Structure formats: C-alpha cells, structure tokens
Figure (cartoon, rainbow, N blue to C red):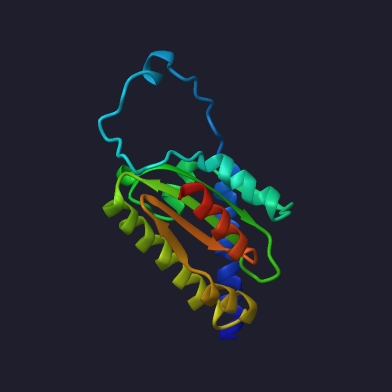
Length: 177
C-alpha cells in the first residue's frame, strides 16, 4: 500500500510539473539596438556569454531526444525554486525516460559565483528529492539519480538527470568553458 501511495504521489507531481510546463508560453523579445552598444557594468573578464536556449536545443539534437517539453526560463525559476534575483538566464527541458521520472535538464547562468552556489544547492536538493522518492519504487531512477550530479563551472550551473549524462556534461563544459 505504501508503494502504491508513493507511486501515485510521484505521478501526481509529474503531472503537475508537465501541466505547468504546457501552460507556459514564451513572449517574443525585440532587441533594443541602442542597448547592444552599451557596455554593462557587471561584465567580468573570464565570463563567456552562452545562449542557454541554443545549448538546450543542441543537447536535445545531439542525444537524439524526441519526446520532450522545453521549459521557459520563468517556469524553471519557479518550479525549481531558484533565487530569481540571482539568475541571469535559464533554459532546459523534461523528456521521457525508461524510469518513472522524466529526464530533467536545467541550465542556469547565475549573476555571480555566489549566486551559482545558491542555484547549485537548489538543484542538488532536487536531485536528492528524486533519489529519495525513487528509492521506494523505481530502482532505475534511483540508480540514475545516484550517478548524476549538478555541475558548476564559473557562473554556469547544470542539472543533468538524464540517461545521456556524460554526453550532456561534456557539451555543457565545452560551451561554458
């Protein structure tokens, strides 16, 4: 009975997450030509600007993922309870997997390295939560959660709960390094 309740709870949580993702729409932004030439005050010498949406699409294509839902930046921030004032950009997706839990890929550019540490803590807590839930009824997801981790490189943070963990981490590190 306990396993059944845990399974139903996990499926309900997954349904709610996918519903939130499906309801979100992305607004088109029009770039301000005047702003493109203005230097920003918070630029650092060693930070490379990475288009996280393009990187997310690259991960989907490179790993041959066909059944997925893109997650808008604002949905990622609220769903993963990220400190919104410390997130510069975010992108990611959920995809079907062989286990009960969907693959979760979250890419974040934080405001600075302190903010990146706070984001990494939140994403690590999410990965731990998956492992705790999977422990009672989904050995495949538990094993995957135990073999995946949150990756931080400078101001960039990535959560790669995926069967393609190694390839995704490699692509992430190449892009942000």
